[in-house]
Length: 215
Image 1 (cartoon, one colour):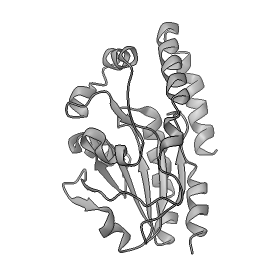
Image 2 (tube, one colour):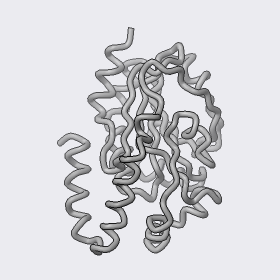
Image 3 (spheres, one colour):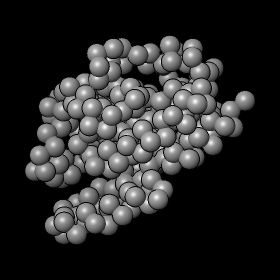
């Protein structure tokens, strides 16, 4: 089963558990985000990748330039450990981690949540790659990915107990679009996947194909 087939199956099962009024708020927010053109404004292939230096779940600080010194970088943005779709996607990336590193690339994942929230996620899925904290979504903003949740959807997330005020260190409404970039050693984005639909993610096989296509 592909990653997106797994995500779709989860989505369809989950819809039956969500009240109709909540589903409508989620649907409307998703449509408004899609209509905003946010994904079209995000960085894409051919752009210079903005540099960053971010703390990891294990207490290190990692800089993009240091990672690129060793080879290409696969950079993926996700919303947080509270998101089941994010968890499924990160687990899938872990399953393909050996294939990514075999191509000489480094995989890193970035979210706006604090390191203390990322560490349990790393341990739960036995992630062999670094999970970085982009507090305030400053790095996501540089990539054109950051957006603010509408009030009604933010209220839904509060009722669901996601506690984004704490998890995102006082930036509860700002999240990144789901996105994955393949960046070559010179810092140029060579492949990009960006979507406003958080139930859809980059297929690991497409990431591997993009790495294979690097010069």
